[in-house]
Length: 134
Image (cartoon, rainbow, N blue to C red):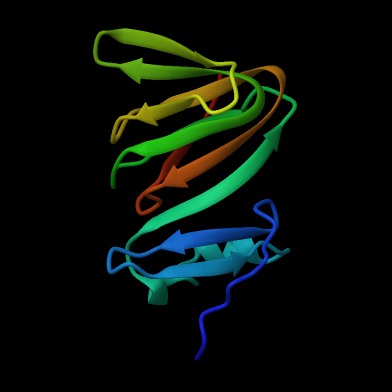
């Protein structure tokens, strides 16, 4: 089967990057998140998910990724990330397009939205955990 080449819209199509160099576009539709959390993409194997999100409000939860570091690149707006580090909370502000953050493996993190923002994420999704934000 031929590899699809696009064009794709990053907000409607995420991308799975496999460790063997594969790149598989995944349509984000009504069933995407259910399929993702239920193992519906297990056939793709380990890898990283490339996604783009728009934010107008602070995150309502914390998350952590035990399978590797997460890359967050700011496209527009302003985001303040809060990371739970071994020596306490660390805040990192992204307020210039093109700035990026490396969230260390297994580090709980959340974000505050200072100004409507768009960001690109490269996430090692296996084993990702969430918890409510107080």
